[in-house]
Image 1 (tube, rainbow, N blue to C red):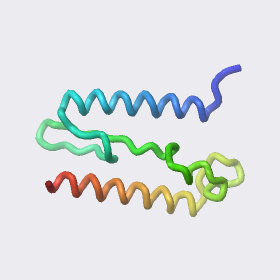
Image 2 (image 1 turned 90 degrees about the vertical axis):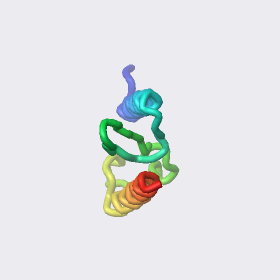
Image 3 (image 1 turned 45 degrees about the vertical axis):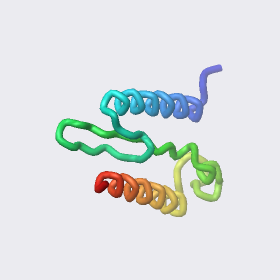
Image 4 (image 1 turned 90 degrees about the horizontal axis):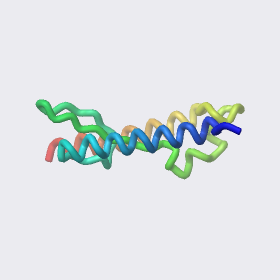
Length: 94
């Protein structure tokens, strides 16, 4: 039996996280926040893993198919992105 879509997404997320870590290590930048910022020629990238969030497994945030976010799920995701973006912008001003 093949991998489920959930397993495939988890594997993909892991590959993305590893790629970003390697990229940022070669550019001496951080991976702790969600960002894709160009400062001169220095690209800084980070990854926020939605699936690592405890609430992301709560069925209350999904449509009946259990895969797509409902309005409450999108609001929660928006809060997470706004928080991460705030951290990114704060870090750039230091």
